Image (cartoon, rainbow, N blue to C red; front, side, top):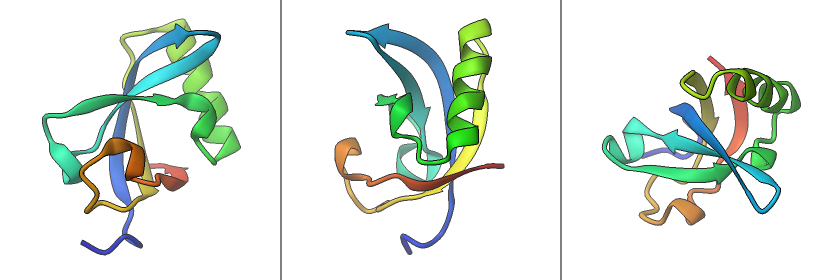
Length: 88
């Protein structure tokens, strides 16, 4: 799949670990059934990052839809190279 294409990301279930806020990501185009933790500080769109922190800090059951470019053919979530985040 072309890595220049935007892919939808579902963001949910925040938690704090060692002073860092982590969020759960689900990317249907990558693996519909797999979710993984991702540091909110790695979102490269400042307004989206602040929106995620604000919304999920107030309601940990809230789900946010975003989009980003990534290396979708990677099987390891740490190698997805998620970048160019944006609102949907």
